[in-house]
Length: 522
Ligand code: ADP
Image (tube, rainbow, N blue to C red):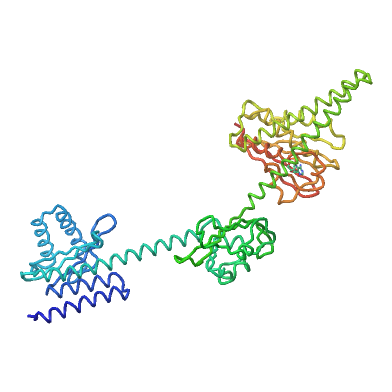
């Protein structure tokens, strides 16, 4: 038998060992193992078990002494019964379950101790010790075991905190790394500590190259529109006495990329202070605003083109009307008819332009196009369109090729006429030196195709997708001279798509273009 003094010494040694294990950052399993070992030794027992409670309140065995591995699943199930009866406060039944559990492990185990693991009032698990003799456990024994269990609970709590912190850190790192905006984290001397994927993409620098450099070696501007980091720094930014979001600094301009190109960006520099008010970090959030800039530019182009397009017919109408109204001259009938004719034509042009603008805005607002479908004879629409435009040019030769059995298709004839008119009118507009304009069709059972071919200026490959965008016009001497809003092909595409079809172009600069429209037959 141990003397009381020996016992106390042992007790102290165990506690010391356990606390050392916790503070020396051994992993949780190691700490639990030591707690189990110490507890079993303290009670001169043979078997010890520690089970931990998970987020759902279920208990799972985590550390054992004297239990073969293959018994653990069965013991987990029995443990469940113990927990359930314990929570029903039926101590008799708990003891029965504990005895059964002990017997499963080893028939010689006849006494059991159950000590809860708790931290801050929250149940974290349960420790069980079994021994092969029935002996009185003094309150002292129980108290010592409880202090072991408390140590284990601290270790579990720390491990959970550490795990959660680690998870939060990983989550944050993933958010930063995959953010669509560039995120650049700087230290208090504005040295780059973190550089995410989007920042790499926007600047052309790799994180590997950028880390450790000063921010203005990497985020350099070709042109600044708003804000200035250096001026702000000279004026004392960031101001530690106003530590709120408003203290962020916004800089907007064209960022000079590593490859010499530029990207329009808006950078928000947000300062981060330590508790005692010292600047710890600056987080720069870099947003690519090229699309926004492009949209703004497009809007400006649109306003100037549309105003120009509106002004021309209005000026003509006003001029012709003023002439007709002159009181000092009497105009003959033929003259009046000719002038009124021009006024009527120009009014039609105005109406058409306004219609186009309204349709475009409806499409843009995603209210879509309403179609009035019926049988549609594309060959006939094309013939009539060519006949109308032929009268407006003597520089161009027209050819029409449709097979005799070209099928009727389902569609909105008025809308589709707009597509054909637009393609034929463009073919004339963009072949200023004349040439042949061929309009024709092919059919293959399920689909029909219409083509409009010219021998005009053509276009570069890079323009081929963009010409179908709203207000897009190829920038060149010819388009500056020719009337147009850049809406024709945008509307044509929308109309063709509303019919379930496609439109595309084949072209080469100086040689001409062919537009193809393909529609399903039904
Ligand atoms: P608009 O003719 O009013 O400018 P569109 O949307 O009809 O607008 O055409 C967009 C742009 O596509 C034109 O400005 C022109 O640059 C180009 N384009 C259209 N058709 C042709 C063509 N047949 N040949 C060459 N370029 C064309």
